[in-house]
Length: 158
Image 1 (cartoon, rainbow, N blue to C red):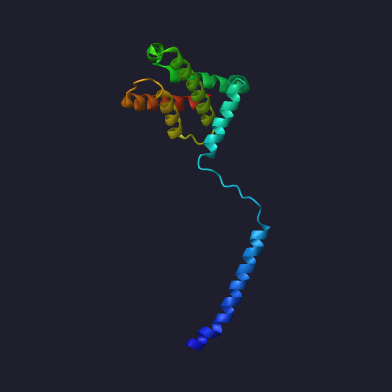
Image 2: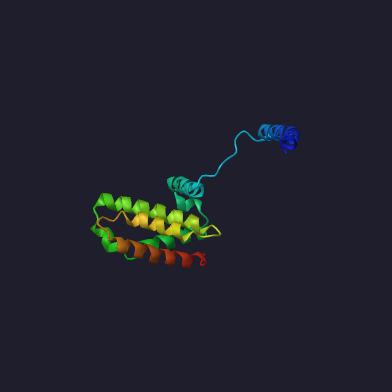
């Protein structure tokens, strides 16, 4: 039995050498850098695109149906928040308005995709609503879901 193991050992060593050589050939022929997609790469790309567009006037860079959809999204987001907005001081109003416009632009881009990630839309709305001072956590959740549902309904409209 021990003799059989000894006889098989040169075959194993040759096999290991062949595998090692083959591996070296694969490594040598592989590209220098294989890109590994980041977990949130698509979301980061969306945000970069939005910031680029907002800097140059996002609505001017979009086709007309997307402009209309973005305005509709903005109206949905603003719906029912007029009194809360007027109670804020001017600095918070500016931040809230700017973040709302960015949120509407991001959601508009997300709606262009074939598969809509409702969770991302809800998170975007929640992050925007968190800017309201002293907001109730339950109100925040409920408003975000209501607004997300309304936004999803308008996707097919445009």
